[in-house]
Length: 340
Image (cartoon, rainbow, N blue to C red; front, side, top):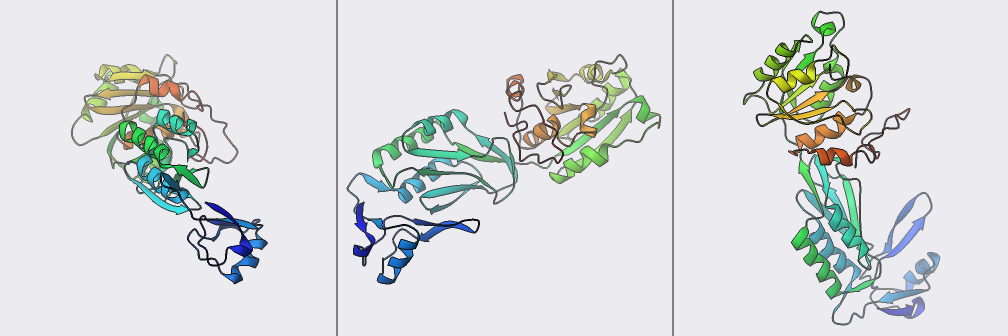
């Protein structure tokens, strides 16, 4: 790039986007890279504080910020990512589908530790909708050595992608409601009012719901009745505390469920259970799901819909950010809760 006084730049080609900021109203390019500078443009440049500009004069082996951003954007993006740009040297990543955001954290950190390149994203595991912006990348300077960009692109070819979205599947769900108080009609079953609405919101459906008392045998039989090809996921609610009458965990185990974890470093959701019955995930939902706006269920359920199999290690990582502040107005998932 050559630095030129704006009065001497008439007839030259602008080598970079020039940003205009109107406080509270607008931030964006006033003049785009490649603009042919005219005499009447000079007052506009001066108004936004640009007495000098850069014009294009790239040497071999050096690439412009826009070209660098295009190469990096393509290298960083994986499945179901739509790339928009470049604008002001930046490429923005958008989700192309309804799904869960996945970030390759080690590679993200490696990229941001390299010189002159940045990649910024929202929290991993955030539920995404089509056209939702999930991150952006750019180089800091106006130009970069081509060899540096090629090196980072090679990292992504070996270890990438950095950013992708796993699409939600539409699951057929079976539900077992436990509790003598519900089975005997002492209180009303509120599953559909709370958890059921969330299931429908994500496009899945409840195929069958069975209410059983606090009886190990009946709980296990109810689970076994749902263990066929008609169901993709089994939810069990109630009876997961340490009270002597709470036998749901034993009923789940008696059905042959391999319990991956019971007890999590997430509040609310400490008594959550996750297991596998045959090939189906089983989620044991503690009573908090009927009270709090966001619990571990809201963290786990979208990831199950995206086809993830969870491990104890994955759950242990949720301890960082796993304490819900129970705000007066809940903004989940637009908050750090459960992002790990």
